[in-house]
Length: 105
Image (cartoon, rainbow, N blue to C red; front, side, top):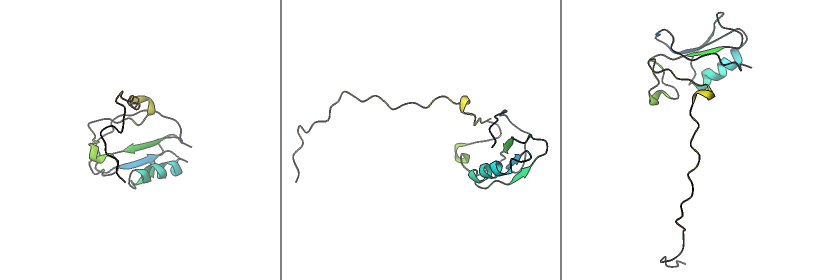
């Protein structure tokens, strides 16, 4: 299982999006590629056995593309890099009552 987080940043500009992975990480990389609308995946001997690299180019149309992912804006998927989500808002003091509402049968 791939569990190590290494880094996030911009790679050299490319024409096609893809997922690359180190030796033995093909199952996890295939899963990631499928989640990103079937990006092609290829082994990269330059990566460690527990590394997966997602490379997005201008051709990317998968999840998040409509939000403007681009090569100029680095995106971190590491959970420690995001602000916590806001919790539910506190209930108001306005009580809901039946006053003024006619009964309907």
